[in-house]
Length: 186
Image 1: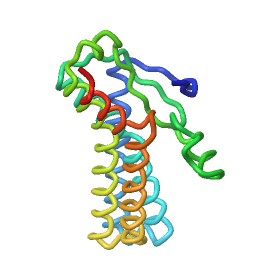
Image 2: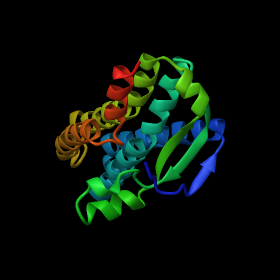
Image 3: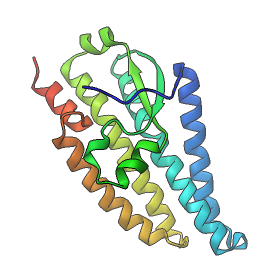
Image 4: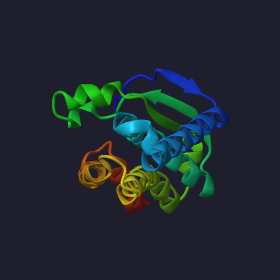
C-alpha cells in the first residue's frame, strides 16, 4: 500500500500532547460557540467550525494509540499528512482531504505483528470509532446548546461519519477493513 509522504514526524509524547491539547482547544471553542452570545453570530459560527475541525482532526490517531497501548502494541511516534486514501474522494473534496493536516500513528511493526488478532483489530477499529464518536458528540453538544448552525453540523456529522464508516469498511486501506482482516487472520 502506497501512502502519501509524511509532512511532519514527532515522538509519541509530543504527538499525544499536541492532539490532546488541540482536542481540548476544540472543545473550548465549541463551548464558546454555545455559551457566549456576546461573541456575535459570526464569532460563534467560526468558533463552532474551528472547534469541530480540531476535534475531527485530532481524535483519530489518538484513538489508535490509546487503544493500541491498552492492548500492548508499541508505537514509534506520530506523523502528519493528508488523507491516506485521496482516491476515494470525489474531485474537489479529494484536494481538501489531501491538504488537511491529519495525524497518523506509527506502530512498531514487530509489536503490531506479535499482538493477537483481537488486539490488532481493536487498535485498527479505534481510530475511525474515536473520530465518529468524538465528532458526533461535539456536534450534538453544539446542537443541544443551541449554537448557530449546531443542528446542521450534527446532521452533516452523522451523515459524513456514516458514509466514512462504510468506506473504511469497504476499501483495502480502511481501518475497519484492516480490523476485519485482523480478526479473520490466524
